[in-house]
Image (cartoon, rainbow, N blue to C red; front, side, top):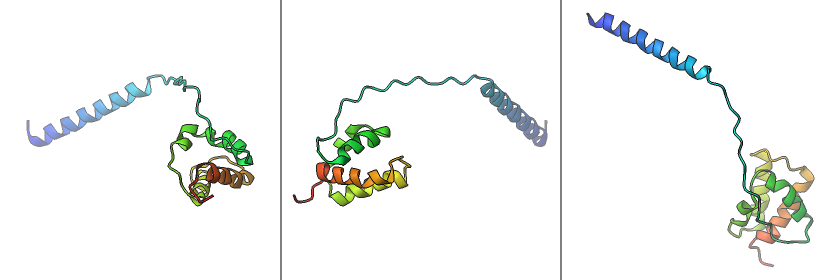
Length: 115
């Protein structure tokens, strides 16, 4: 057998194997995953600021309270930028009028600005 015939045979074999693999995976039924997340036990730092209620409602839609609680103390400007980023970059569905309230709460409760 010459090299050309061998190469053609290998190409056809590889194509048939690829087709068989594709058909084999296409025929497999898809199953939905049932994922049970643990109950949220963390709480945001208590505050009488209106943003506390807003953060409790909106921030936990995308991530746990632990995510906020584990952040190092940062200036209020950082928290404002973070909330804005969550909305503009990651698409968090926080209403426009709540962004400032949440930012102020996070800055006061988790910030390191001089008091």
